[in-house]
Image (tube, rainbow, N blue to C red; front, top):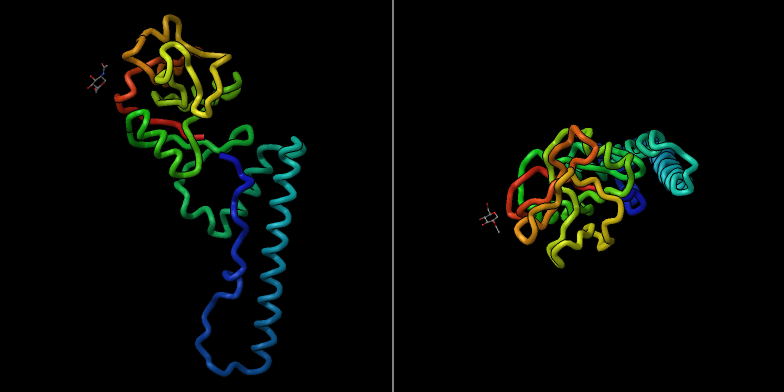
Length: 202
Ligand SMILES: *[C@@H]1O[C@H](CO)[C@@H](O)[C@H](O)[C@H]1NC(C)=O
């Protein structure tokens, strides 16, 4: 899941607050005006910073830590409160591991419902990161379309793979990929897509 599409903080939140008195004294009015202006400036500043940082990030000019830091600021502006808790930031993407178990397709539908998809692994670093969760879980890999032709959920063909020795071995019975033997680098297994497992969204 990328960051660029996060909506900007709503400016209306800055003007919120109790407004019980119908006729505030003139001084109160001025104070409120100054307060609201200051609030709006702050929000604008945060929005500009986030946009600038994200732009820099995609030019590899800032670290993951900085993206994480700015992600937190965006979350403060209550946009992220609707998102599920527990997303982990790594290498410029956010990842989420489920706590419940679903079929491969149901898992994928869940990820899509939160603007993500099942995880695509395209580096050794990402493979190690995935294994580090020590969880038997679905990833975004399937050969349901053409037996033996494994593809990622974005349609790209599988090039570098981390199948456990002897896998994939399920022919037409096992058309979905998961991480199973996570204590070894080569941890992938092919399995019956109708089985229920945890999953990882990206
Ligand atoms: C896959 O698993 C489901 C659920 O356990 C089972 O009903 C089905 O027969 C299996 N499919 C194959 C092709 O073995």
